[in-house]
Amino acid sequence: MTGSDMTDLLWSAYPWVKAGHIMAVIAWMAGLFYLPRLYVYHVERGWDAEPTRALFETMEERLLRVIMNPAMIASWGFGLILVATPGLIDWSMIWPWLKAVGIAAMTWFHMWLAGQRRKLMAGDDVLTGRGYRMMNEVPTLLMVLIVVSVVVKF
Image 1 (cartoon, rainbow, N blue to C red):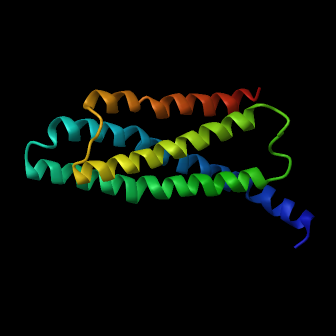
Image 2 (cartoon, rainbow, N blue to C red; image 1 turned 30 degrees about the horizontal axis):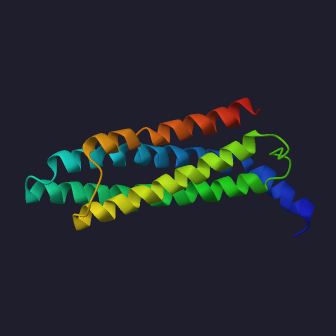
């Protein structure tokens, strides 16, 4: 396949790739907003009784494994295809670099949440409910950075 054929393919697939990217990001963000909230309830109420703790652990594990991990992978996959689409991004501008920083931070936060789940399962030292409430603001701040970067394109 020639470079021209690849460019034509990427541009013809662009609307579908963009739609897939948006849907994956929405699913990922939903999980990034909800999982820290589950941790708040887990540390504030989940230690009281075995059935309650087991319920939180199941909800957290399924949210992370069944929704968040595939959504993050799909977000990255569709996003990288968009990055590879010629002429779509002007790398001399600031916005793509800010978006990249935001995405890296969002991915780090996802991994941090996964690590916190392992700590909760093991009964290790974890944050308080207040600490998880504060961490629940991280994806909002990153979302603002990413969306403003992409829409305003400064």
